[in-house]
Structure formats: structure tokens, C-alpha cells
Length: 364
Ligand SMILES: Nc1ncnc2c1ncn2[C@@H]1O[C@H](COP(=O)(O)OP(=O)(O)OP(=O)(O)O)[C@@H](O)[C@H]1O
Ligand SMILES: [Mg+2]
Image 1: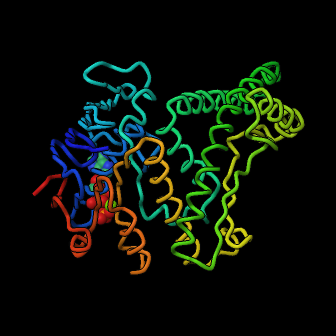
Image 2: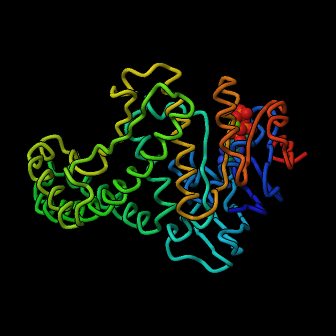
Image 3: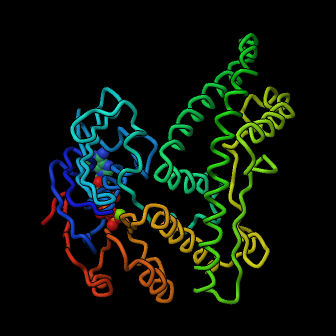
């Protein structure tokens, strides 16, 4: 996987800028608030069709502008690709592949594969379940195009069902729709659950091995926390378990006017030596776990696609002690890297291929 060329126009603090990347290591340096993270966000957008700092895609548009774009040219499995994401103030984002507009944004997901690693990820273990679901979803949307479609549809139906429940006090007739929406959620959810279960089984194997390297006296284990007893069952079996759970919580959902049951509540249970890391892990242990999860995500993409994803490292090394820095650096030798930092000393450790100095949304 190799990102060769990126053009930004009216994207965040860039009015017009162009980047030609080195196939190996690219160092993006500059003072605070100059546009380093914005550049990585644009690269990640080409891969995930999302902005990693916000759910509002319009926020990517430079202040006061009507239209903006992120263009990228890359190589995946030996094939050349071009993708362009156009942001508009007055309508939804559009995605073009080789100049042709895609019908759905999700069709643009995962052609360019990336793994982003930023300081927030170091809180992955202690943060709420939502951030671990986002971790899973981001990886799976890139690996399995169908997953992204199911997820978009699930979120749409979930939003609709939430509105039904919320408005049901004023309009009790809306509850006639409850069963239909629950059925649709269970069906879509069953597909998501099965993908997640299989991904987590592989992630567990890879993460346990990597973890043993950095902490030989500890055992890391990952377990999928979801509703079905057997998330590996057939779609029908998983759907039945989800539906069963939903109907047992129907009264509670109507009383609380919110969607309490479904795979939008899933989580990853992370244990070190048999105890939940989120509650009993030390600072160092939870950081190490987070590193291991992100590096494992990268390894699994390589296993699945036969090539490493582009690694986007945003300021994360400066947050780590020497030992953990070395651990990360030892595992990222393969594949292309874009790494941001304020000090250039990190460059020496990576033998940078190309260095970009950023100031005020320009390469200087
Ligand atoms: N939509 C936008 N339009 C214009 N400017 C924006 C927009 N969104 C963010 N910015 C500005 O972009 C600037 C640079 O942000 P960025 O996060 O890329 O900085 P950075 O170089 O990574 O800095 P740091 O080293 O502090 O992480 C910020 O000053 C922010 O106000
Ligand atoms: Mg930054």
C-alpha cells in the first residue's frame, strides 16, 4: 500500500497544497497548530471516508469556504488508484474514483488502507466502550466492504428507532413500528456481530503474541462482549439471539425511550493475567495494551491483504517512554509511514526518507 500524491484544497487550514510522499518514511514537522494533524486527517479521509476528529464532515471544509477537496493517488495490490473527496457547505460529501462519482460514500472505504495511531489511542483501554467499538469498526470497514454497508444501514435504522422511542410519549401510535424496526436491527446486527467475532478472534491471537514480546511475564487476552452466546453461529441463529434479547428488553426500552439492546452496545473485554485491564491495569500496562492493539490491527491488515497499510503516526512517539518507543519503532519497519512531530530528533531514529516542514497550512 503506497500513498504517492495528495492534493488539498480548502481543507481545514490548507487553501491549496500538494504532497508527493516517499514510499517509506515521511516526516511531517512543524510547530503547534500549523496543519500536521490536518494532513494526516486528510490522508485518513481518503481511506475511511471519515474525519477522525469529528463526526461532522463539513468541519473539514476550510472556514468560510463553499467547496473543498482532498485528492489522492495511491497504489494498492500493485494497481494504481485515484480517489477524490469533495466537501461542500451546502450538500453532502461526494466521492470520485478515477473521476467517476461513487453512488455511496462507503464504496470509497478501504481501497486505501491506513492505520492511524494518535495519542488518544493510548486511552483506548480506559475509555468508554464507544472508543473500542470505533476501533473495531474502523478496521473492519477497511477490511470488509460489506461491513461498512451493514454498519451504515444499522446506524440509520438505529437512529430512526431512537426517534420513534423518543417521540412515542407524544405520539403513542409510533410504537406500532417498534417490532419492524427491532427486526431490522437484529438482522443487520447479526451480520455485524459475526464479522466482529471473527476479527476479534484473530486480533486476540496476534495481540497476545506481540504482548508477550514487550511484557513476557504477563498474558493479554481479548474477548468479545456481545449479546449472542455464540456470535459464530449462522446469521439466522445470531439474529434469533439478538431478537430474543430485544424482546426481553422491550418494556425497558419503551420506558426509558432509548435503544438499550443491540450490537451498538458491544465492547471488547481486555484482560491482563485474568483481570480487567480497564479497572486493574497500571498506567504503563494500559498504554502497553493500547500499543499492542494498534500494532496488531496493522499486522492483521498485512495478513489479510498481503501488504502493510499506510501507517499514520500522529505525535504518538513523543508520548511514550524509551522502551515503548523502541517497541513501536521495531515493529513498523515495513510499509509506508507518515509521522508528525514537533521536534525533528525523532527523525534520526527513523532515517526519514522525506521531511515536510509545515507552517500555516503550507509546506515551507
Ligand atoms: N475547518 C477549518 N478551517 C480552517 N482552519 C482550521 C479548520 N479546522 C482546524 N483549523 C485550524 O488548523 C490549525 C492546525 O491544526 P492541526 O491540528 O493540524 O495542528 P498541528 O500542526 O497538528 O498542531 P499540534 O502540534 O498542536 O498537534 C488549527 O489552528 C485550527 O484552528
Ligand atoms: Mg497535531
